[in-house]
Amino acid sequence: MPRKPTTTYGHIAFSKSGKVRKHTYRLSDDKRKQEEEVANQFCKSLGSRREENIKYRMLDERDHDFLLLGNNYNVFVQITEIAQREYLTPLDHHAYLLGQSGFTEFYVGEDGKMSGVDSHKRDSMIRQRIADKCAKNYAKPTGNELWLLIFSSDSMLSPVVYQTKTRIELPSLLAARSFCALKGCEPFDQIWFMALGLPPNKIWPHE
Image (tube, rainbow, N blue to C red; front, side, top):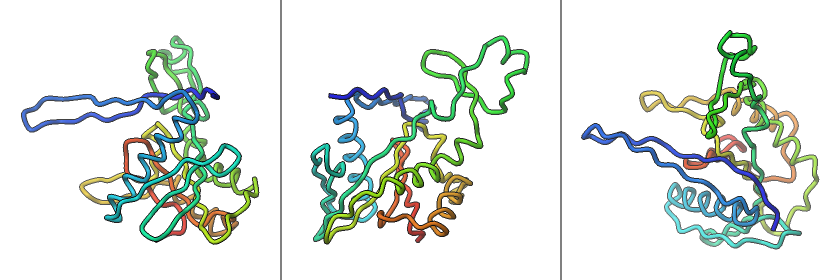
């Protein structure tokens, strides 16, 4: 099976007793198993939101990626990933210490190595991935909707943050919605983004 490198994702939990626990997870490096884990996370989270038991069935490699099985409806889903390496640039440690990297945001990898974050590119990644997938002209299944699910193991890519229970939509989400409003997103009926370990966010249509 094709191999697909991935990165660790997770969260830090703070208990009432003051203990701090780090919960980390990692997808399989096997592309097919990786897609199934993503499908499972998405269906569980969406089912919890909609209060229904949503299941899935993986499809043949020549078809769309999986079939979402809801209550009295089925949806074909295409999966695509945005990887950290697409907007990170490895940095020379000496240049970083001297403030000569040219970056204002930084990321330290699992190996301890420093990278610069191209924030402009990061914030345009969801919009660009939608454009790339729409350009492939996928055949739309007869009688069923077709959704696009974009995922990432990087929580920095989440298009929504919450501050004191207030939902704030970030520039990446606004740029993606503007693209869909101006250019359309055929053949996809709905577009979702999911940072692994977090609830999915609906990009289009805007609710």
